[in-house]
Image 1: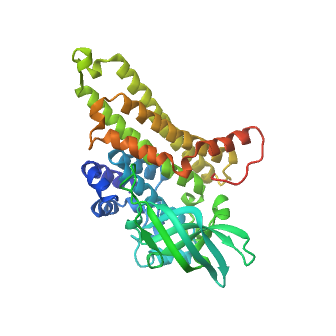
Image 2: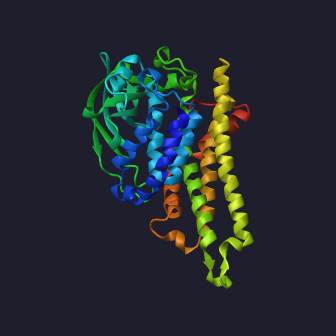
Image 3: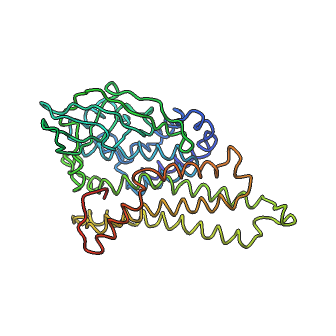
Length: 388
């Protein structure tokens, strides 16, 4: 089934390219694009089979994301984010899974995980309030996953959880006026004193140890992978896809470009131009190869029934943040070498340059923190719980 989904996604790429300007003007991906993606089965790739999902290999999922982003960065970004959420929902207690998919297995969820809201313990659950930013693709979702700190009666923090909230209990505030990833509709979410049952929450301390109550119903090895390995890769993959799209357009441009300052020489005849694309191509390939090989290694550990070692989980984060940097370095080099035509509105290159740099500021792409964790472990220092 994954092959059929990938084939369907590839058939849509020309349409996503054609709609890129419209996507930016709308400041969100057009409904028609999301509908077409849904019809390929893309959003079901990481969804449990018992809810009409495919339980696909995550490498197939990331491959589809990379291809979508190679056509349009914003479409690739929200596809990645919305597409990974079914994986986390599968870890929630069964009551929450049934609420999301029991009547409609095509239900989608957006998210905002930074714990900017406050949850107070109450009988049977929590009272949740706050404002969350950057909920990409929220217009195409009817539930949201929100990060929040849990406070007891003494106003002390006792947990960090993900809260699942239905559309009628939150407001989407249109604030997304930006220069990059303009089409992601990453608007604010506001919740005012909403009751969230205990069964509609998931502790990050549980996901940190690769556990969730939903594993009782969804026992596939897919749902035993580390949360942060999948979710940070979800952020880097579209940026690698943007670099792939930028590379393809740059090569095409250079084959057509004539350099007036060099007596009409074809740009593709410039030996330095050939060296630049060799370097850029290698950076893109290295980013992708390391990202996927690490996920494969984690899968192998799970299949053997073994705990994924901390050094591997930190290597995933190391190569994920550096993968983002490699992809952006490649885009920068290609953009700088493309000449004035790359500046024109409508070109993929200028949009990829803006979109990739916008994606770079996501918390998952903070290189120093991820690299410090890896280095500290190598030196034998204690590693505090974090995004690994």
